[in-house]
Image (tube, rainbow, N blue to C red; front, top):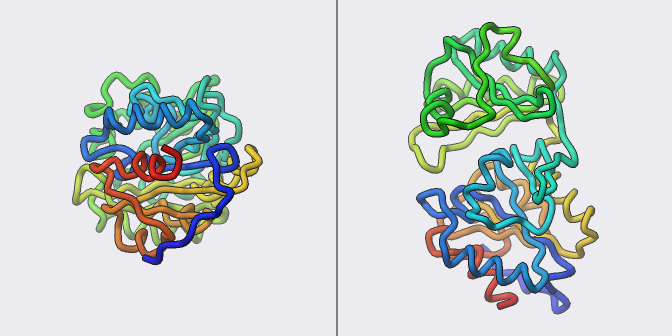
Length: 285
């Protein structure tokens, strides 16, 4: 990885700093350390424009931040939503058409694989799954995220897609999901992320969304909305590659996948070493 020189006019007020959560800002336990929390709060108090770009929803991202509220628009669901972080209002969204989610969901159904469906229903984000559904995807939500107010059990196939659908997701062994991932580009206007789960190897996530719903588009959009001169992006996993390449300065944490480190211009310590916070303290602390 080549180290690039930083611009002489770099400041907290003329830049925006966008970080992935799991495996990047959060430690191996999925938490923001006390050191990172205190350091980032102090930097934001002096004008640092700092936010997140995550595969998580806004509802699950905010508790992981331990009370840290981003000072710029948040990017959630891998870019499907841009959110105002203080109130959780969706500023921009990327819904799927019935033809798109119909074709994608049929790829799962034809193989007997259960998945979850994200939609906006009656003004609320809902995560729906069939009453008969089984597998790691369903366990992730009903056991690991028990009590999540977004959860909704659908009685039949049609009701699974109630509301404005914007995201389909499945957690499973990669050999079962790889054939579906390969089919998604053949459905017009869709894209998919296929990547290892940060906390539970050997399982992989397959996440399906609109073609333009990407972390890189979200990060560039936030840069434009804020009128920032420089965009810094931090990441570790395959769904971070695009935004690291699109940023003025892509930063890979030490524990990042090899492909991510190769795509980055700059390096930071690992997520367990408070890499993002220490990188920013070196700049502005």
